[in-house]
Amino acid sequence: MQKETVKCYKVIETEWEPTDGLRAIEEVEYEERLIRNERTTTERTRLWGFVDENGEISIEIKYHCVWKFRDGLSKVRLGNQWGVIDISGAEVIPVRYQALFSLPDGMIQVQLNGKWGYLNRRGETVINCRYDYIFPFRNGFAGVKQDGKYGFINIGGEEVTGIEFDEIWLLASDKSVRVRVGVQWKVIYLP
Image (cartoon, rainbow, N blue to C red; front, side):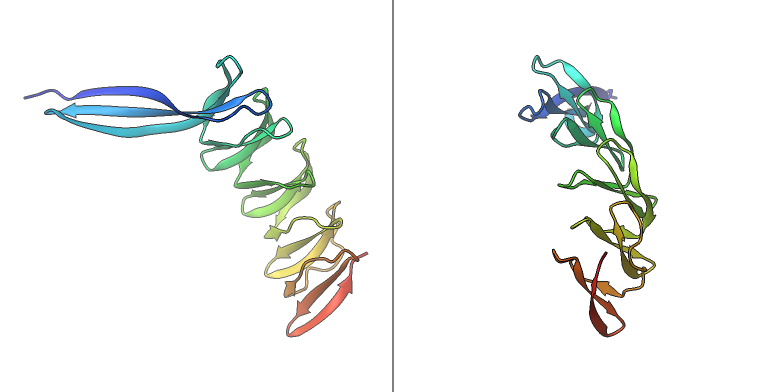
């Protein structure tokens, strides 16, 4: 009876161009089995980290997904949870969110326990995760959805309309927006 031979090895498969002095690398661990002269190779893990200009590991290879650094920050995923790290590897936004989107205005839209809110770039809560969905801010206001209805909040998280509309459109530059209640459409102006 022939013995089974198992060998594990790691390979760096992907390297990105450096951003903010760091280069993302992808390390893949494979398991190779040899049974009766038949070789099978299986991927065990696929993880990401960052190396410095000298190729030294700067941020531990432990993430399931990373984004390139932008303004000193990188979005990262561990398992199914997202967060943000800085170039030292410190968590600026804890890796605990179901979804996380950086927006051009510097706000970060996050989902926690199925509810949406906003953080600033320092990871401080601007709007608690309490809405079924929050649209990106425009002219200082964002549409929100809760229990199948829509309304608007300001950048401070205050509700500036009731959450009472069946549908909302994009906010215009004059702060007017079309809203629908039942079959009736009307235009309202936000303060």
